[in-house]
Image (cartoon, rainbow, N blue to C red; front, side, top):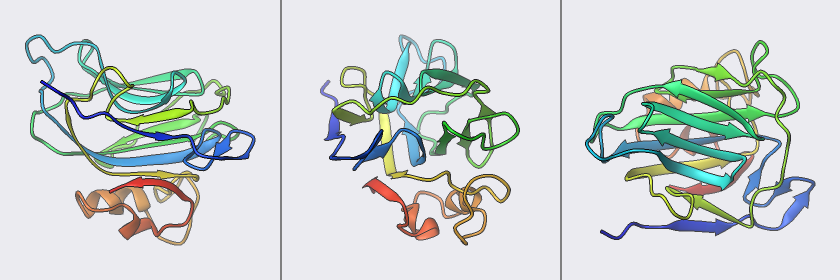
Length: 196
């Protein structure tokens, strides 16, 4: 069956590794994901990409190992998690390649407002690829529905970590509003790409 392949350009270079549609130095990507297949589904293996900016920046679900895998600046973080087909998950990737965002960690993957901090080695920043993808890496599809995908140029605030923009705990509030546009919680400050 045919899969949708959504892509966009990296956009104009603003400064260094900051391009119009993505800043690889620091930021957040919020989205809602409803998988077509459950963990352990027959014949479903490998990485299924939710967003892919380059081989050094992506979020995928690894059906072979029953976990999410995110890569930030060539550093990989995995988070064990099972998927139930047809269930919607609120996912937020947050990273800062220059400063830790919690303890000794440069990244976080929030799953339904459960924080999973990781990546203790400082990531090496590189530019986004000329084409960035949603729901695929250009080849392998995520096999599910992705909604409300919003890319920020700042680390969203979880009540203790990130950049406090005066919205309170943005990570928790995005989850509480369930399936809506994340900017209803955060406002549009520092949004560089949105696919609601």
